[in-house]
Image (cartoon, rainbow, N blue to C red):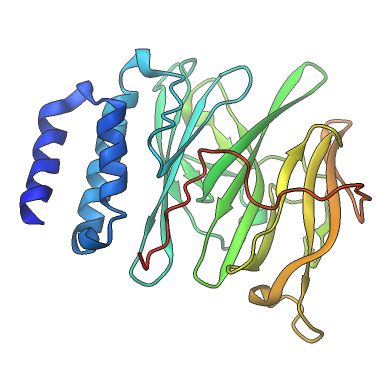
Length: 288
């Protein structure tokens, strides 16, 4: 193990800006291998440094890195920015979340390291300075209102007992110092038992980590189709480990510059509940 760790360290130092997708794929899988668990944090740091080297080359902008299975790379339809997100398993069964944001149009620094702030008060935090509610981004949707573009994110944050999906947003700004995660584009005061004390900057869906729940864009229905989440029995309200889909759906749709909620939305067919984007990592189980 020490030999392979030395090889990874040496390749990271020597490779520099010459990092290739194949090496990123190998580095990304290295920290997920069970035999490398004692060196997981070191290998994950090498992966992050190598990815930074890769995105420091302007010609690599827009590369979705499909072979790097631990990483999600998402760009909006106008390709104004690229969002890189990944997770690192912990021995406790939880995860740490990481990200980079790259916008060639930023006038100060085109690349930004993202720092996970956790989920405390997540709906009410308008985050700047590279802070974000950590998770794996699996889709970006662009909407428009009065000539202005709005970028909405779908993110997945797995946990030991509770998984959380967010409908979040990015306010891009003219430079990295002005970028914000979260936006006042959500005219939603509740979704299921998630009740918001004031208008949120993002909305969240919490449910048992052994289950799956749909939060996904559906072109046919012109909105985000979401599993309606409910507790498994009475008396467990707001104990999110007890929540799961109740086989009804809600729709979140764009109208007058805001996302609105259409509760108990009728569907004529079932939707897949797993994320449909192939960039969502599927090998994150910390027990493996």
